[in-house]
Amino acid sequence: MLTKKQKELFVYLSDYISSNDISPSFEEMKNAVNLKSKSGIHRLITSLEQRGYIKRLKHKARAMEITKELPNINPSITNSEENFLNIPLVGSIAAGEAIEAISTSDSMISVPKSLVTKHSTYFGLKVRGLSMIDEGIFDGDIAIIKKTTSAENGKIAAVLTLDNEITLKKIKMTNQKIYLIPANKAYDIKEHDIGDVQIQGTLSGIIRKYN
Image (cartoon, rainbow, N blue to C red; front, top):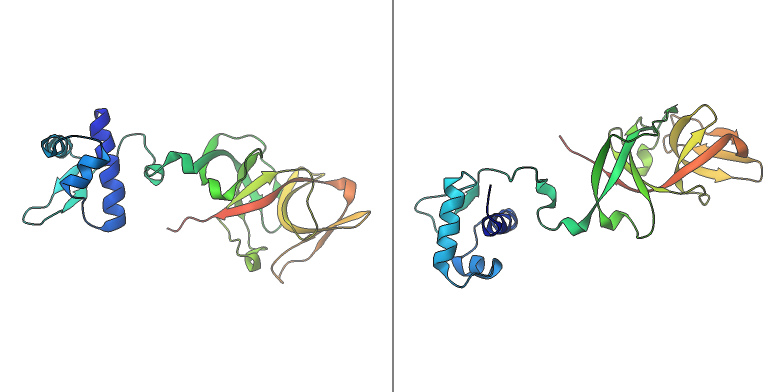
């Protein structure tokens, strides 16, 4: 276990080195963790190195490397947890033929708050299929869905059918019909009666992971 100051310095070092490719100066570290002396920083660095979290590179000025992550901490949010929001990841959604909806959530996903707005509810769905590739939505993406039961024409929405199947499509509605429009010429527009589908939410953003 790290002390509060050790953890505070380690997080600062991780962020600084990631952004600048060199380690901060003792003066910068002292100011960052609000210590009065550089000797205190030296003790913290030594303790972090002894615990295997960092390694000082010999014969190089301001040269350290991070060799270990903090336990139970997502490295993507060490900079500022308040910039992210955890939302439920409730399963898969088809960007192709509709698939069976998954309405329960066993996991959460952290998303940037820039993709969401206050006082709204969101959930994530993993995209399967290629019917929305012309909108930049690919198989394996995570669709961030703003929960709503209505949507304007032209919006991309998660739509639930009478067969408890869900799909991601651009929608167009008339008085009696709703059209589910793909963004891939290889797929056909699907027509439904208004009462036969339920809008589950509208697309707010996409998260993509690169292997």
